[in-house]
Amino acid sequence: MDELAVFRKIKEIAKEHYLEEQNLDISKHFERGVKYLTDCQRILYIYFSEHKIFSKKFLYTTLSYIDQRAKTKTKTVLINDSTAKSGYYWSKSLLTPEQEEEIDIFFRDFISEINNKNLISLTNILFDRSWFKVPDFIISNENFSGEDIYRISESTEYNQEPICLFEFNQDIFEETDKEKFYQSHKNSISSFINIYKHQESNDLDTSYINKVSDYFHRYQQVISLFKKFRIEKSYFNFIKPFLEGNNYNVLLTITTSEQLSRLERTLVNQFLYEIVSHMAADYQALKTENEKLKRRKSYTLTTHGLKTEIGNSLLQLSRTLRKKYNVLAKKNPVLENLRQNIYSLDKNIHQIYSITGIHSLLEKVDDRESFIFSAKDDELLQEEKVDFDVLEYCSHINELYEDDYSIHIETDLNLNEIDFKIFDLFFSEIMMKLFYGTLFENLTRYAEPENELLKLHIYRENDYLVFKNKKNANASLTKRYLRGNLGFFKSIIEDTKTGLMDIDRSDSENYYIKLKL
Image (tube, rainbow, N blue to C red):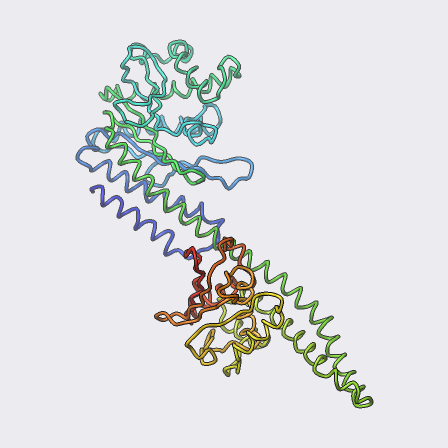
């Protein structure tokens, strides 16, 4: 398997677990992540085992990642499956089955000690956000200076990037006594703790120092095991791709009998970034969808309450007022002059009552039958095309805003012949007013006057109906500044898959709404 095959396989795995899995429950993201990382780890293992260069020095590998579902405490997850007893995948070329079993038993005990909090795990430290560096970390028994050393190197033969090195003193690497080990390596251990904890190790609890020392001592025992297997040099590489603000970083541990070259370390990092990117993209998509569902629920609860209140108060009051007026007008013809006002008031209240239903439609976009029933019941959509004069409605709006600039529509189209439809049902008069009213409202707020007029240009461009106006230089027109129901129309049109609505703010001078129905 070559490098391109690894990237291709990772994408295929991501597609299987994320793109083709239609589970939108964000709480299931971590469970899917474990399955995804398990499959990715197998691919990396195959690559390290079969690659003509890696296979000659590859000893073992494992993946771990952070589970941050817990509100108070994070958990490090070591990827494991039935093919890896301890979670580690061992070389088939450098280790015999008997050697593999012996070292696997050792690591199972090692992991047990870490889980029981008897050791301070380097994996947990590297996942800790207080760790001020995010370099690759190497534990090695190749000692260049002749003494034990822990350092952060800005430029080494391992890599051109900063790397943390913990090197064992070769003269005492056979030492198994914990106390003697600490005395021989206390300078390196103290240096490591000081940098990690940002304080002098003398100020730390003795048990903490011992847990760190015991952890490194365990790796010294691993080195002894490898020496027994005639593997003289051991390089324990902890490689962590870092994405700022991302909670789904993974850590790869890969141990080799020779140093990884700069190119090899860079390549492994690229594999990890590819793996993490799919996890991050999936989470962001789920988060966006989850927030969308929350907004829908919020809109629905709010508008249902508003609709109920209008129905029980204003609507009933308007009906009662109209009935009493009809009775009184028959007895007193002078009251006939109020008929237009009374009936207009009643009509407007009915329209407001119907408009509250548009928000509740957002929860029904996935149920065509329920959507259509509610839309027709609230008089938002209808079977027949409505007779709606856009220019006349524009004139009416100008009368309401008589102290402001007048809105002027410039178009070569016959606007009354344009069909506005969702699920093959036409916009009602209420919906037409709401749509154009929203456009006009944004014009009065954010448009730049042209010759004392707020001009709305309407034209066809390919399959789109385009609404364009000159943008006021002081208007940022970010999502939160747009007025009215543009967002609702976009959601209803696109989520029902009946069309597209592009709200384009990219032009520095003009603002566009492009509609395809």
